[in-house]
Image (tube, rainbow, N blue to C red; front, side, top):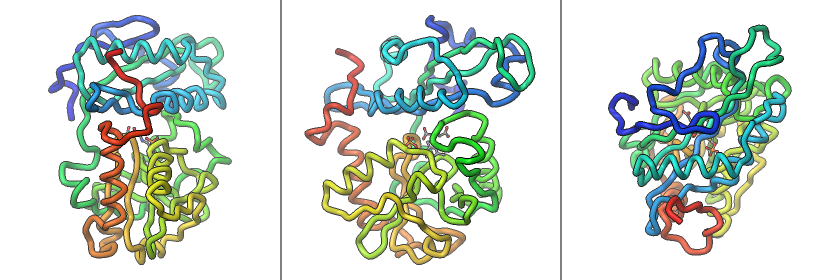
Length: 311
Ligand code: PPE
């Protein structure tokens, strides 16, 4: 995935559509030095009724909530960002894409306090296929438990999607990749399972579904919430405030990741231990297929979760 190979030409920045190459900031911008930005990752799917953004309102709500602890005052309303995004997708004729809004402290002075640094906001979108490799959705991925722990919410808010803290995700993910794995699982300060560097995690044991709760220092994932809703509607028992120990991972029947980028990705091994039969398990497959039926517009009853691009 390189932007250089993509058919993209426009970015929305601070109220205007600008050419891709012109979306620039000063090197002394606050966010570049201290990671003081908040962002979202959203997907637009090519549904049977045309391109539609999935759970747009929930993602925008989270963007504004992420900004709160940092007193980052986004200079645009959610409606403005929504309109800008839809127009960006139309202008670039995209059927499906990944959408990245970002608000950050810009250029004025340096020093940890953002003082008079203006709040800047941009939205870009681009085509983004499977997050963890072409075969990941069907075959599952090999993961390792990272030696890096997730920061706790008493250190950095974990329900806010801020840019700086992703340096923790980078450490965990790159450690895994340099050891030959596709992705990491990160434990929290207490040593219980938190999440992936860019995904929430689910475990299946004896037909029931478990996922760490918000108190485990996880991001309150929107795909996580979607998977919980779909699973319950299918009749599964879902424990959504579970405390999962490292060793429970190894004896799980099935494990899978959820995330906007990762969608629903099965995990086939953890630290070289096969999970279940070492392939995508039946419950994972069921939730995954239902998820794709939903986001691609084949399920009735979820219309409020879609914002159609052409309307
Ligand atoms: N935990 C983390 C740490 C996380 O970054 C994500 C999303 C999730 C859970 C799942 O949240 P949600 O997308 O609302 O279901 N990670 C985003 C960024 C990935 C990236 O590499 O950048 C994403 O999936 O868009």
